[in-house]
Image 1 (spheres, one colour):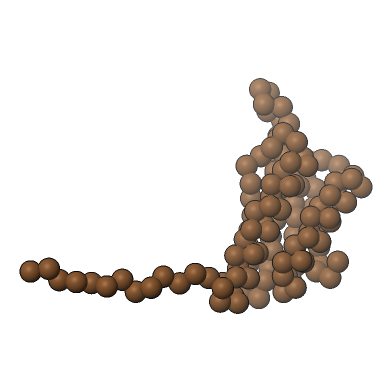
Image 2: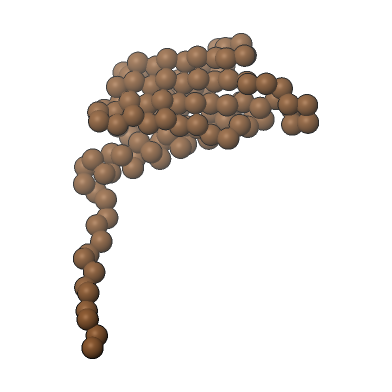
Length: 117
């Protein structure tokens, strides 16, 4: 992996499996842009809900030239689902940024204004 990756765990133990899952998803981001300068991932288990069980949050901060992306998704009961969903959003946002940067965004034609008498 070329980009510096920082993984932080809050209120849960960082296992090798969690680390590997995050690194695998982060490596896929490099396929969409070689301009990524940093990637910070925070995996947390904020608190235990009595009725909903354990919920996991994943926050991703990406830095691109001229742009910083912050991704936060709704909490999920499965940690790996939370990681997947957060990186899916990150992938979409990186793709959109790269399309805008390269000029591949669809431009609408100017609307004609006609005066009716």
